Image (cartoon, rainbow, N blue to C red; front, side, top):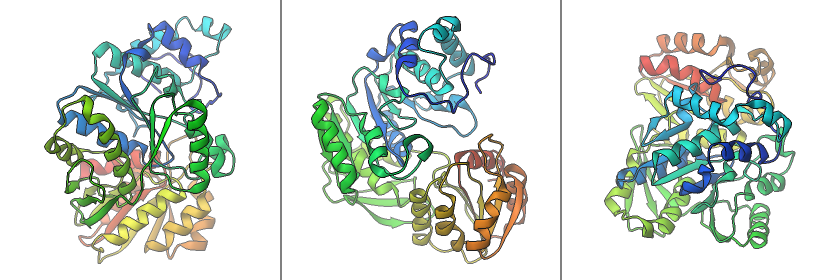
Length: 428
């Protein structure tokens, strides 16, 4: 939870009640800042955080004062709200939330008590407005239609990266329902850019855009193609190349970044007329973008990789990237911890056979699936496996025993990655 916020003021993080009324009430108390923030709104199952990171970095390289709002975090809630890469101060965040929430009795008698995400979203709008950012890039937390971030008065652009199966406890089964939730970010007169190409998803997007009067701008997820990938960087080329970049490099090495970059380049093509962004600034921003915990190479020889893959599509993307990189000659170890409600069977079938050893861990999250509950899938799919206990203890032990030509990958949930990063980043 957030420092300096008394217990009981907010509902627990995972309390999700559809509707924007609670966030709207908080924003009204803060003076309606959502109307003073020029913003790009980003939704999707996977990749939306990377898109935010790329756009944030490009506009910073172009000299703009840029706010970014992302979720979840790697252990520190202030990471979610930042201006030019600097997280909000804990005391400032607490003061904004208290200003919005108190007296809480009035909220109880009206729209209800907000959860942490709703309160943080309102605080982000107020922080960006009061700090006078030139542009904010906002990530939808869950879905889009009823997500607190949709209280943005009118975005410059709406972006949807992809739609895959995840969060079944909220959306239910089937891609169409998830697509409908995410299509809710479409707004009248605002271009909606997406790299999603599944026909059943695009039909939902087309219908939503027609109903609200938005312009659907589909881009091919194959438009940005990987030229070369190493443990240091990835080289890319846009087939369409509307910005004239030619070949460009990123330090975000995941091969799965291609469709995300296609969305980013299309968004920049729509926006550069409003700001003076030269090719050099765009290339610099793409190179300097960082997104901790998303195919983050913490160390080389031995290689240590952190990736927040938490659903089948993301785990497949992780495996595809590892197969493209120069192979480690030594033992390949996977440290895996997941949350309840995820598609564990499918994730295990994709991931576990790729490694010589699988170490199952339980993160400190109250939603963590006990390592023992993962053992059944390890028996089915892993060559060799063991129960590793807590994330930090297992990460420390594994990092000490790694040989120079070995590989350690940590994934399964963002909480697992965050806890491992606290230990492994220092060692790296």
